[in-house]
Image (tube, rainbow, N blue to C red; front, top):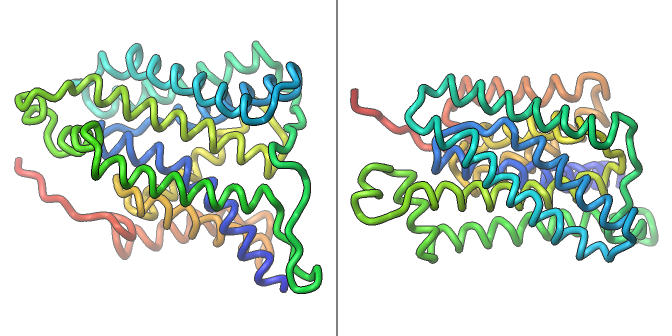
Length: 293
């Protein structure tokens, strides 16, 4: 039962990574940029929900909605002020700006909420589902996390395939210039991508802090890096790849902690990524694209 319990924990953790990775992969797949401030948007979403639920004693659903609204506005604002002016700039300039935005959000959180960690309340309670006469216990938070990840991935797949905005996103991903000539508002489309990715970051931050109830200004840093690793692992730019990469990464991390070493679990995760990239540089579901020079 220990193996099955670790597997469930790994899938639950991996589902959180997958939700975060979906934000990374959408922004990269459509805007062709790496938003390294994404992990700090997770932290802002978790703080927003924390204050709604703990300080103002509002229902958890209200806290989640408020967090999504706050992060959506934040994501669109970041895109408008920090990234849009650099649309034609070299990739290095955008990368440095993303790191600067990340530090700005972290230090703003330190000034607003101090570095003292806060205990995040569980949004679904501390109960669990008992199986096999109580030998296997699955927390309600883990169940909610996995179900939420599946619903989000299915919704995003449908959105990008069937809706008018989703088709516009795919067109912008293929060729911004051609999409603009066909009447697509490229700026509005990319803003929508940031809005969706930031809303997903809020959900991921709440689920993360529900499972690991310690909240601080650096809460989103390491999960953000691991989720980016998951996006690359699965094939950055691919929605199914982000989910598969996130879940595999979570399972590898939990099994590494359980059977090898808690101190080396992070190193094992990144070592597996290096091996995968050496064998398949585009990731598990990524496609090789030849660019004309």
